[in-house]
Image (cartoon, rainbow, N blue to C red; front, side):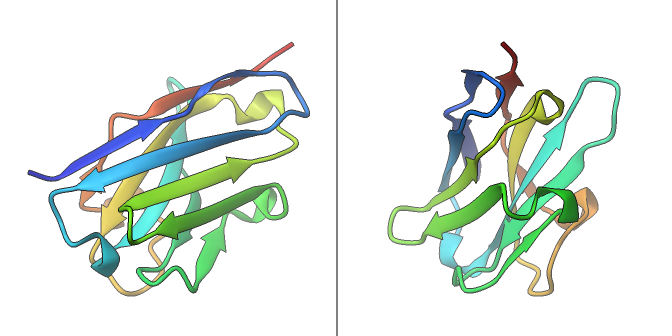
Length: 124
């Protein structure tokens, strides 16, 4: 069955860096757009970044450009989110998601599969 497993979250100080990872299985990973979303309790899930099936195209939430970087390794069925210069407002649960759509998917409704998330807390 389809499984997306996120890991690598944790507590980091403001200004620090963290890389979260997502291991995918149960579908043809190299044919799927992959995305990262984040959610704070009581708020809607927010698009963070997406990467095309080949890895050649990336899309970001405008406010995160330059600080966050999404990448994938199709040989390992992995997708990554590198987060730099972290701020307390980046604190959230980060979710990995997959979709077979070929156009750039930036809304939660466009994604077919979801992981359980990994918590990222930015605090001193």
